[in-house]
Image 1 (cartoon, helix red, strand yellow):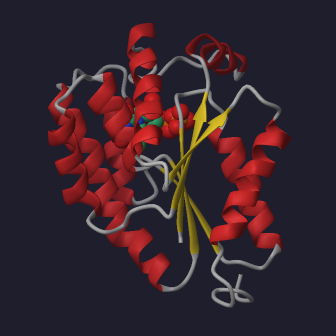
Image 2: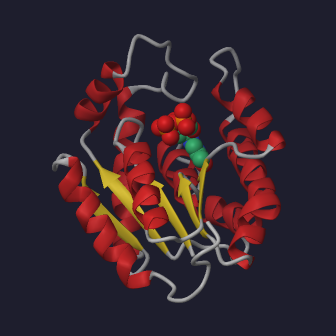
Length: 212
Ligand code: TYD
């Protein structure tokens, strides 16, 4: 099964990804954790271009680059892992593209959905967690991580992240059977408990246990 985590920068995705992976591994599931864009040599190279603050990238070019990186990841890693019965957890996936390039950059949503569809084909997440957080709090949390320079995406104006956030909420409203919206202002343990309860219900029984 494929589990994805989504949310604006600073929403706490990576923490929840790590906690969930650890919990699943303790139950002896074979878990593969990936981050997007990245996780294959080509995807990491594309990531370098996409996050380079010195690049000027046209919105549609940006859309194709994220989707190119994702297609490579799907073919090289995700599809084979799923075929082997592993649980794949992705820190960002297709909904990032719809939220950031579609809602954030204000590209035509139907066009963006089509391009995403070409990139991922039938590799659709079993469940997607959207960590919902107001933009000022997310920015504050990001600032607490340290004085690192922001990357090209993080250089975007406040209004861009407001659009991304409402995009995520719209995605969750449109696909309630797949997408779970979580209040990321709640304590980490509370949010993680909800995540585990939902994952527990989707867990495959009797496959991929024992090897990892
Ligand atoms: P990253 O440093 O991984 O951010 P985070 O830790 O918040 O996940 O950088 C990924 C950036 O790329 C982030 O700002 C979101 C953006 N992004 C898109 O705009 N579209 C996409 O399809 C993906 C996967 C990421």
